[in-house]
Amino acid sequence: MHRAIVGLLAVAAMVAAGCGAGDQADATSDPAPAAGTPADVVAAAEQRLGDSFAGGFVDRSGGVVVLTTDRAAAEQVRSLGATPKVVEHSRAELDDWQARIGAALGPEPSSAVTTWGVDVERNAVVVHVLVGQPVPPQLQQIADDAGDAVRITEVQSPVVPLPGS
Image 1 (cartoon, rainbow, N blue to C red):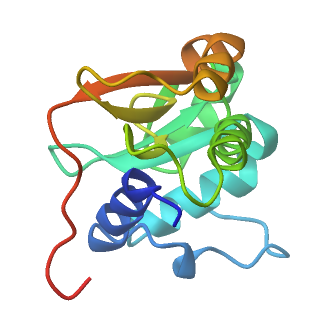
Image 2 (cartoon, rainbow, N blue to C red):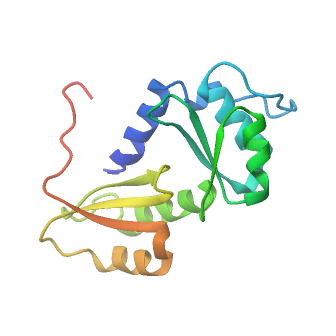
């Protein structure tokens, strides 16, 4: 069972905030300044920024923040009505590290690993491991190779799914 609950929680939060993938702009259109939902802004930013796109989220004040690896793209982000944040890792890079972790841990990961997934705000793949449990060697190797793109965090207990989920 794939335990990428962190990724699922991030997707659920974005959907609740109006940033779901289902709202993305048509790839054939030239995105005008995005209006309306945060999803429209993030989708337009992803289209405009291409490989430098690193994600987007709604901050606590309700503003849209778009992450990019290209400092020169900040004005493009502002033109969409979002706040730019320059980060080190693109979304594609983080998705790749997440996939490597999933492949290394396999369908039945160690019980020490509770969740893993892309944390857009932290610009990293975050892996939760139970306090006092050894980090699986294949996971530690990936974290060592990835540098700050993968962060292993100890947690007190595993995530408990909500009833009906």
